[in-house]
Image 1 (cartoon, rainbow, N blue to C red):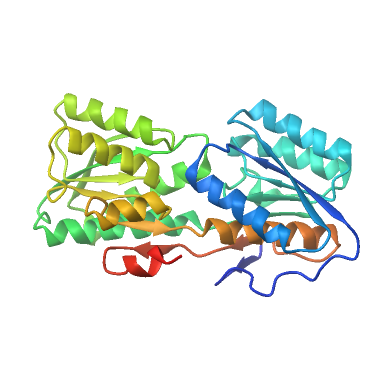
Image 2 (cartoon, rainbow, N blue to C red; image 1 turned 90 degrees about the vertical axis):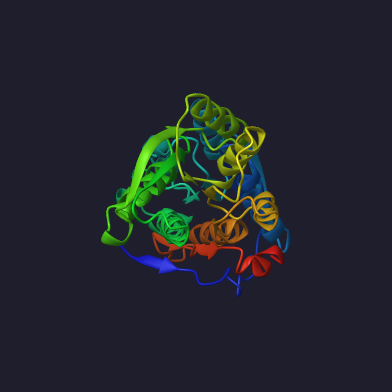
Amino acid sequence: MKTFLITTVLAAGIASAASAENIGVSMALFDDNFLTVLRNGMQDYAKGLDGVTLQVEDAQNDVGKQLNQIQNFVASGVDAIIVNPVDTDATAAMSQAAADAGIPLVYVNRQPVNLDSLPEKQAFVASDEKESGTLEAKEVCRLLKEKGKDKGANIVIMMGELSNQAARMRTQDVHDVIATDDCKFIKVVEEQTAEWSRTKGTDLMTNWLSAGLQFDAVVSNNDEMAIGAIQALKTAGVSMDDMIVGGVDATADALAAMKAGDLDVTVFQNAAGQGQGAVDAALKLARGEKVETKIFVPFELVTPANLADYMKK
């Protein structure tokens, strides 16, 4: 299966359509900082294209609701469908519904379970999750060494929703890194899901601290949970100078936390770029053009050393 790498947001864009084109978009959840940037990226890009309309729906983290939305898009005869899946294990039925109707479908950000067997006129636009957790974990490893913890260090992992491929892959990335000779001094003492949520990240960290868990670093699958962990750590009187905290996404709140000296590492995931890439792919497929099955937007490591570059984005 071919993979196409987007090194920047698709700057050239797509030529304006000769006739109106309607794309149905089902987002897993509106009430999510990263997915809001992704959704806005799609909508802002579409506004600049002649005759392109997006019909955006909120699945509210409900798989059944999302399947109904896709069936409604099919019934209304949209030209293409974009899906940010609630549950990446439930995508086979979504693919089948679109394929049966002959409507192109593009998954965005969350990897569908049937990626290696997608029907014709279907694609996946995201970032390679092998990079995200790997970049984060390697930097945490480097920072632990810098603090003189290379004889032995304990970490905790905050996982996203386990129904999401990204959560599983980012967590596995961490385990792969600490299995290497460079980072084998690191031990995972606890890993649990906080479901991508800042509030649940705070609650989980509070529970760990109350249980007397001892650790040197927090490795979170996303920034929201990392920020929640930071809030709990600070409430408990833990000095952030003594604790390493990492996340993924480089959201505005995460960058602010890094500027404040609380967050040590994050990984920039170009949500707007993924959104634009998804719209481009959907339009190309609707017009009968060839599109690579996997379209990847690279992750980028963000630390205090290059923070200023990302504060401008």
